[in-house]
View 1 (cartoon, rainbow, N blue to C red):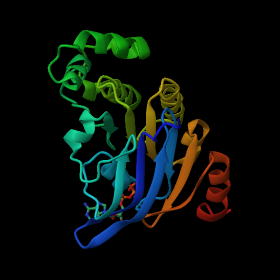
View 2 (view 1 turned 90 degrees about the horizontal axis):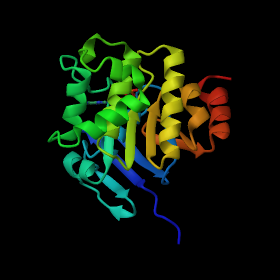
View 3 (view 1 turned 120 degrees about the vertical axis):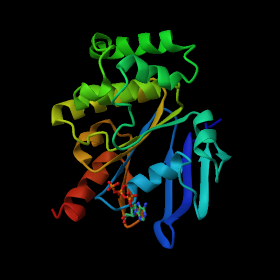
View 4 (view 1 turned 45 degrees about the vertical axis):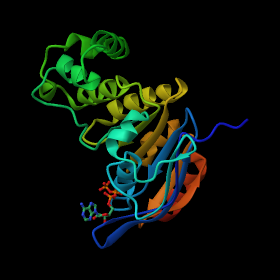
Length: 234
Ligand code: ATP
């Protein structure tokens, strides 16, 4: 028996008003793998993530979660089905402490202790800063918090948009190492990233997205070749 992919898009189209920005996107994220969506700004990466998280409706095609057609799902329903996204800009509350930000992830606060414990075990820095305002921490620490908060929801699928944004290169590769580890723990990961080089090492599959279409998909090495010859101009 072959397990259904955790997340799948088939011929997905999406538009902002009259402007169609996804023009038939196909992608498949098997369980416990990292799928990287690469390409320059404006190609449709963020919109793809928004569709996957239920934040944006499709105009055609299908969104499937674990083989089930969930096209038209709301963001709330998607999160109930285990889809969790860290948006561009991380979505943490700058004026709340680390602890309070983690508390927000639990909804009711009943699982706070377990979530905190897991977060501090994974990122000891966060433990040291548990009473510090999130907005006063470094970009890397904020991203650790955003990841911890997402993990607090016990996600099946994690959607990461431009994890590298505003972070020093060394922090970015540390973050992606952690993301690779999450996939090894069984979490499926869809990541949009403009800087291919930082994510290719941990990706199982990569897709190059241009003009609202996936123009190439395959093993990271193939996509890296494609990136350097076409999009990066050799
Ligand atoms: P980025 O890395 O900048 O987010 P991207 O590849 O993720 O780029 P999208 O953000 O998905 O691309 O944008 C795809 C296209 O849709 C772009 O041409 C953009 O200008 C357009 N677009 C994005 N958001 C809106 C909006 N709210 N209204 C109208 N057009 C939009």
